[in-house]
Image (cartoon, rainbow, N blue to C red):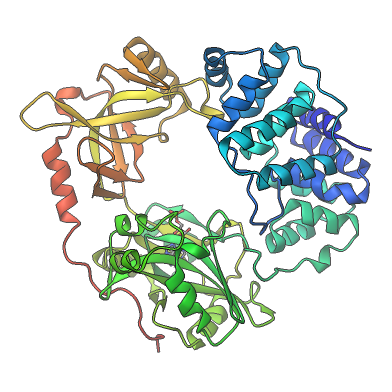
Length: 555
Ligand code: AMP
């Protein structure tokens, strides 16, 4: 019987080689060695998952519960734990270090099914204290090597250099299937465990979407401008407004409706008015679209939608002050028909054929020719105060979970600001060991005072980040938990999509999607932008919002 120690040994071997082929071979051999009943769990764990796709359970072990569990396992105090975390920035690595320091042996290794039962118990346990005890006991029963991977699974990432594509290859190799068949099954059921179980029984052809199990979302590739878009897609393209809300998949069958967010979690309870309207749809459907704050015929700022996020069963007052609608752009299932392989043209035609209730609208769509027209539509979309444009190939299928060239997204940054770095934190994952997360500020007009306006993580090269880390360490003036305040010396140009009023930062503003455009070695703190300029940018965006949704199907 394969157990969690065997899983850990395979995972260690996978992590230790850089060869993709060797990784695939190792995992394939492991999967092959499992009894059929264990294949599902084995593959799911290597893909970093704990529960099946569409399963509403979550482990939900917070940082505090984890800390308590580790401290109670002994061998380490709070300070050492913090240092360990800073060194590794990976829960699994911290767990192993703690257990090794405590010279912990662990008991008899859990089988995969026992681990599955432990995870089920953990998910059903509520309250931070109870979670901490359950977590402590689970880790306590395991060897340091196994506990390391349990920690990684609980935190949601294996980090052993196994991208999903490699897991698919390993499943194919283990059970004599083609990677294409595995990958197609993966698109349909979105769960490496379920796919591996089908492959082991030579039943990949049976893979099919299931009602109330969310399909993964089709993703778009960014393009810089209309010329690039047309070069990639050809002259005749469909353009839709790119709405600034939250992605949402809507399943409606009979009188049951569920809404799923981009990370495939159930968000049904947050938007009861959409659920009510969807129940009125005359057909069983799976829709792809976006939840948008929308009232009096206008799109409302994203901040309005933000007040709804994470809030289950909102009061009628909340529903009134932050009204939402569902904007649909795709139809993935209708009745018992799966439409993923039908061309977008056909899916849209059927979508327009549905009788839509008032809180479900169609995305604004136009068919255009050439870059100049794309540019014009982009400006129109911006005038409607949407984020930009999506360009779609009318003849393309819907490919769940894939970022392909059939959907392109075009958003030009609104503007850039020159800012100065005033604080930094250690990065995570690939960026552990470097101060990659920076907090930056603008200057108050007519004074030397700096006010924070945002944080950014991405945009610099690894080399620049290494240099920046050295400077930030040298210029640290104080440390507050993970945050270190630094002397303001590094000037960055940051690009962003929107400036919004916000209480999050002392400046009274926040940037939406900030990223570092360039390190401005040529500028000093005297050259950075001021609060007045931020105010101007914010005002430029707050003119009246206009109608943007097609209220009736296009002719
Ligand atoms: P991004 O989040 O910048 O990667 O852009 C992709 C996101 O744009 C999707 O996940 C959707 O949430 C959003 N989006 C807005 N409008 C559309 C549209 N018409 N078609 C597809 N995605 C859209």
